[in-house]
Image 1: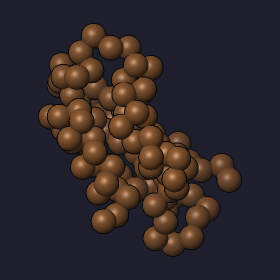
Image 2 (image 1 turned 90 degrees about the vertical axis):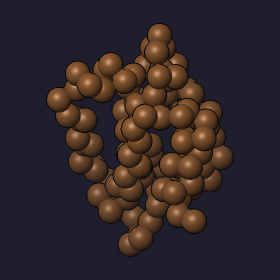
Image 3 (image 1 turned 90 degrees about the horizontal axis):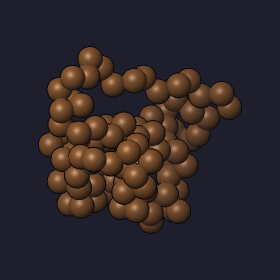
Length: 99
């Protein structure tokens, strides 16, 4: 199973998202071909209701603690409540790699 699939399955099981995207952005960085080290996660869950951004990110970090300690170098998180998601025009683009 790919790292992206593992991330998706774990987040799905723990946070019950209404919408989830797990994008492997490793190809935008200076890593070997087919790497799975840099990811962007877009997550919409009612679990985030009443939580500030830092608390939302901590929840995701807790779910993905193993992956973050074992090979995932970078994880860009975009966490929304269902109401925030409906009001959103677009998800922010990831920054370009500097190294």
